[in-house]
Image (cartoon, rainbow, N blue to C red; front, top):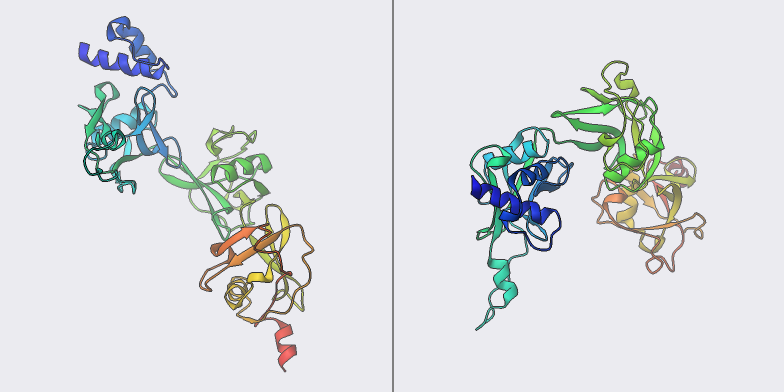
Length: 371
């Protein structure tokens, strides 16, 4: 066993921020072991780029840096050991391999190879486990001539968050994955602080609205949380105080959110909702759209997404009068304008523009003009 404790000692020394690992004989084994098993970030392994700290790419801690673990030597024992050690239950999807990363090492230069290229070719560290328990694992540097594949794992207790039925990834009914099941959140005490944590976690900016039940269609399945009470500073919704939601809530009370990065549209000043000035609600306010790039393809996408048929005319606009300006460029097949390429408040693109207008085929105005 002395070999194992030696490795543990090196890892522990590396973890505790010493510039170079202390020789194993300076660490008595008991302190090394207790330090390694402290909960939190002390383990020399972590999962990144997943939906929570219990899924993602496997990275191991070397002396000064975190490195992705070798995919070729990743197996179900290592997956199980990592998931258990991180407090994430067992492994759900035992061994997935991420596709090769696009950055391949540069071809060796003619004559002498540079040090950098040699370092790239030296291979990735591997996490080798002789059983499905963390104490049976060791990190071995340069263990594999990496083909670029990285080890990934999704543990049983992985959690995730999504917004459903809101017309985009940044608005809708709040759904949380917990214990392998997607479920909703009860709207009792649901407010902007709670919604803000959801929006930030999803990369959707900040919360514009925290909505009660029935604003979006009711969900199905379990109700995971009730009486959620976030401070607004939490990294994940499940870090917020709250109660399990099974008992007092029904799906009529499923909480919803609209985040600042969600876009919704309306037409104003026309005969009805299918004609007028194009306005987009974005980052908490209504904005106009630049007609410098307001062609049949953009107008078609908007009319269709509003359920107003197709675009018939694009009348000349008025000067921009609302707080911001949105620029869209579409190919015409997109579901909504937010699927087109867009730029917000870019003065170059909008310098000579007026506020875009449109007349869609389903408008009463269309029939008046033509009959």
